[in-house]
Length: 300
Length: 266
Image 1 (tube, rainbow over the protein chains, first blue to last red):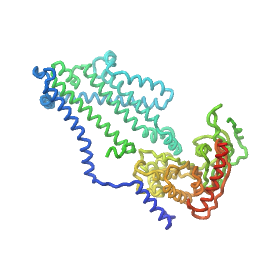
Image 2 (image 1 turned 120 degrees about the vertical axis):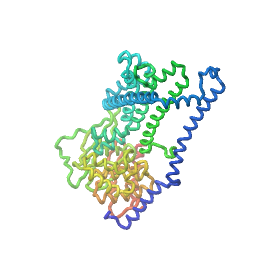
Image 3 (image 1 turned 60 degrees about the horizontal axis):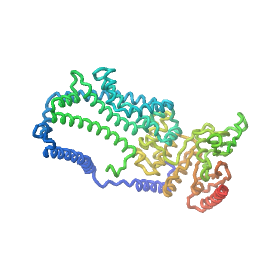
Image 4 (image 1 turned 30 degrees about the horizontal axis):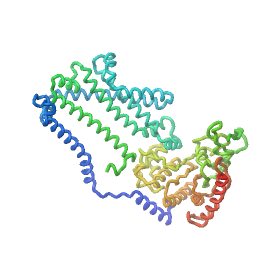
């Protein structure tokens, strides 16, 4: 700044001083210490939750609630986890995880494309908005399992029937997330964007889409939950020949009265679901943190 | 109130903006709503702002200040009358910084240039220069939520400057800031406007702020908005918000403003 004089130098340092006072940045703990603290604070609730479940299970087994322990039907956590460990040693379970995972991916990807396309079109055309909005809400109240007879008649007993129901379950949530995001783009930002000269596609690309990201992500997460449920329901109902899925293993365990086998598969399903959920939560958290939508005191 | 001024006659001698005039408002009226619900926000308001002039618009609530700025910015069209900025580039700043929360300070400034298709390399160097001008070079990679209110408003100023506008419209830009920060930003704004010979139309309801900054203070009436008085402020050197000159002008303007409010109370 060539025009800076002695007095403006004083003002500059006043501004710099005010800036640093207002930001009040001071780190008390070191970075590794903070990471360790954070890891511990996110880990212990999970460890505690698992401990509570195992303890309750063991207690239920020990007091012999229905007198089934003697008949050998009900197994304790130790026996069941042992059965799970054995199953994890067999290729069949891994084959099932792979198959179910592949269907999950395909169904979700399909729902993502269809839901996003519908959301994008509907949010841009106001007359469609009202009509399609009610269809979407209607679809969301319909339990996905009720669609299976329809899907099986239409597609037969195969993966297409399951994919169809997954899309019906997930696409409305995804579309809704995008529409909500577009609707809730702050008017002030739109005004700022227009004064900048952002119009048409540029306005969408640089302003409306990024502004809708948090709501869209929430829709994606909800869509995943719906499609995962639809998938498992589908695998239990639609038994496909030559297709080893988690649903099929669960069915087999039921037919064989194999309670520890059933619980083992349930644990696998639970872990799978939690793992995907954690990925979504992580993305959601990152986006919200970047935008200052998190209370820094609450997240450490 | 449904008074509507006649639409302007094409080719009428309103005159184009000449090089000495940056903004010319001729008999501008703005009506919101229709029928019985119609509200006359601005009533046949005429105002000219010279190139390089710093004009403060002041008035009580409902004087149509923000409406007026929107019309000058081209975000809104007058119901009748003419707004002429002579094809100059106009930038606007609001009371809230209105920064995009997902972009860093630098990217926010760059986006204003991207909309005008400025090449990438030019954008980057110009954004760095602008952030330096508002003393935020060290904070270029921070996101808005990591900055204080005053810093955000400075980023917004840098973004407005990125338009390379000749005319800067400011709608109570420092209204939400504390007095200390505001004082420092007054100095900053004065320096930047002088460096760039910007024409500024600055809306505020802070009388002292108007007296501190303006070359001219224009007083508007409320409902409908109309010019009721103007005060020229001679430039005799650097001004301070607590100087006698500013205090005197502020008290004159305040008296006139109270008179106007009493008229509405009666």
